[in-house]
Image (cartoon, rainbow, N blue to C red; front, top):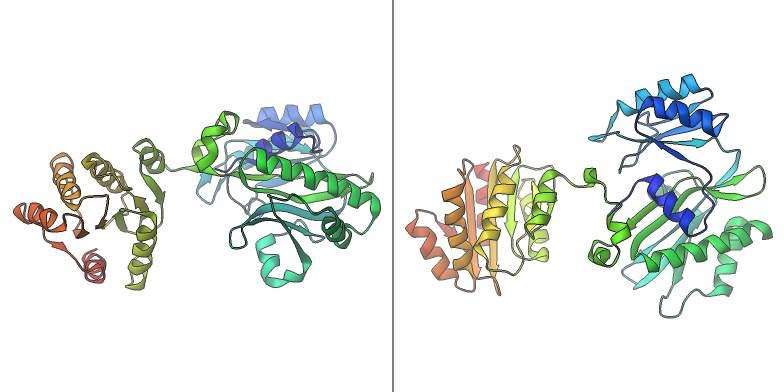
Length: 375
């Protein structure tokens, strides 16, 4: 789960990280009032759950209340990477002397957290990692042991150089680490972590992601969920107990098992197709899941064909087949449909479909080639 910058800053502030004053506005008039209350030059920043706000015109500097109102109006009329801007964040313009980067995320390969720091903040850290990886310091943290203070000191000195900055950054690192663990985060990031003319380091931006699997433990985090993070289909799928992610292709996919679903999408692309979604019906044999899956996929006007790929284990192929027939009674499926059944009760499942005039394949490559050709 992702949250907006202003929400991340609110969370940082609750943990004692200095983020400075901020005002969230949903109208141009509110942005005008924010400039007046904050005083002086302000920065108006679009609040959307995607990057590239600045390049899209979603970040502007206003020196007066009139400018703040006019610029906020322009920003609130923007759509950035498909997301309509509905809020702006108004903050005082900072006297930035230098920009740093500090982030904490999970290194799945090494089964540790990794603290990433750079003296080249304010830029796309992914791009920096490609163009100049030596500018990013990576410091591993074993959560079973905690932070190695001696090693952290060396890493901080490499990035921040001066003792007073190292001291400030150390405190922020410990706070981020505490927050990361307590809130079951998957990423906490400050970019830029700005050095102001006063000599203070301040979090001038905030990016925080959370592990969806742990949200049930954090009602306060769930309360920050933003509707625009998920498409209507993704929300409907979640309510139906399906694992679903919208994609840009035209082949709808219904698969049991996340690994098989990923492999299926890869094979679709291998044979020249583009998946319209990731959809895992899970290990249940409940036919209603197939009905819901079909309805959700057909809600996407881009879909030109559907592939059902079932490898029966706990999931019974005959139950999937019966679910498909029930779905066809409720929904008019006007696009080509290719079914592949193998595993538990696959013979029975194919017989159910054949009686209804539907041929089910057993070979995955053959099924994928058929659905790619049919669309």
